[in-house]
Image (tube, rainbow, N blue to C red; front, side):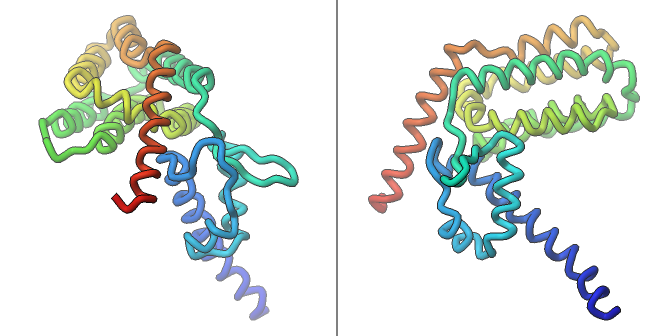
Length: 238
């Protein structure tokens, strides 16, 4: 009985380690600290994270299922390359689910919940020079996920969070060119929702999210340049 009890006590600890490893490897994948297309050295990564290979393998398999990594039998895990068509498809998916969600959110959202998003925008739209591009992207993701949360549909919210994470690196580049316009567009969207104007809200969301394949291709080229420039500078000790 004591052994059974010990196993039960150990399980939550093991789960928390696996979850922590998953989150840390996911962060490395999103930031492209793990280089696009490169094979992941499991031994080296386990040592870097200070964990055994068992929770690491669990995290890697989970990231494969979520589209961040690929796995080849006998060869291991690889960081998914930056592919323009794939990222375009993800933007298209994001646009489709957010536009679909807007009328549902309008139907189900309370005035209080909409007011909370307005309050969030008052804070997030403030001109804070110290905010990094990563901070701005995080605020942007939070806004869109709060709109999705108004639907009460946790499955749709989960899909949006996954898509946001997979396109985040490209959006870091995109955000640098949209600092001045993004917040104004957010305010217009929440006001359309507050007015229960479904047609206006969906049109604004669609326009706000839409990306052309040429824009995405250009962002990916810039992304690759930055990734390898940063690696080169770090290697040289600059």
